[in-house]
Length: 341
Image (spheres, rainbow, N blue to C red):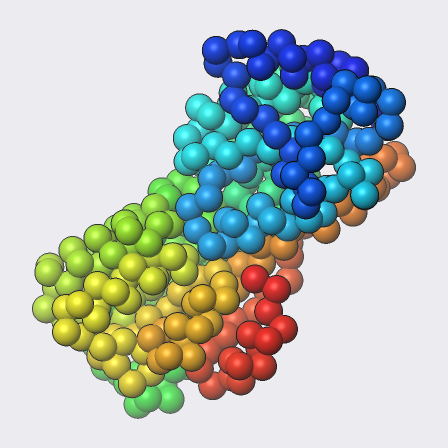
């Protein structure tokens, strides 16, 4: 693919003088800035990356993975935009990338819908779009090159099957189990998949009662707020399903503040998703029963995809990352020593 360095630079200058311009900068490991001569002459591949935000530890690890991968040493310039949880910011960022004539666009969409027009604009401009983490819902799948991320529905099923086995081991298989769910941002791919996956197993367990689903927007503060609502509303809660670790941290705070306990020795079983280091440390402290991994290290996979595209090779449309789960029966100390995030 021909590099478009001079066009990138000229468009960048134009956008900097526009009131609607979002500050665009490289987030490579060296935090470099680039002159027009650099962009014009050195043949680096220019990547525009629109990220959801920085709402969670998982998100920060995901951003860092791309930052560490798409460096000048590897032959790339990474132009990064933090959408701050607003789709309108992402739409603006993608259009800015198109005007800058980047070589590739990486998009982690806040929600699945509303992307047809801007993706068509990218396609018309001849810029491949690689969707990561969350998915897009479009009638024409040729509008993006491929998607890379987690099988969120499988994660939800895995959590429910773990709970089934755990309750059997505890002699509670025939006991009425009252459950609440802290959902992520509604209509995001992770929320939809995890909720649907858990619900499929829930329906097969006649003794499980889902008291309420409520969104905590994947943030710790909202997670604490939602858990406080659950505790004030329901007299008995046996299980908390929290669709990401940061909401779980808030939920645990609310549980302990209410004078209750959680984890393997506590009143409430807590299942979480993402499996970041801080969550595994919470598990070591006996506050979380199990955590279901969502691997944020997508940068190297996307790098491989771009290298294949540069060679003119076809790539798989859907690419899942490998994941596992963790619980208190495991050697968490050893796992944390090797944990990259």
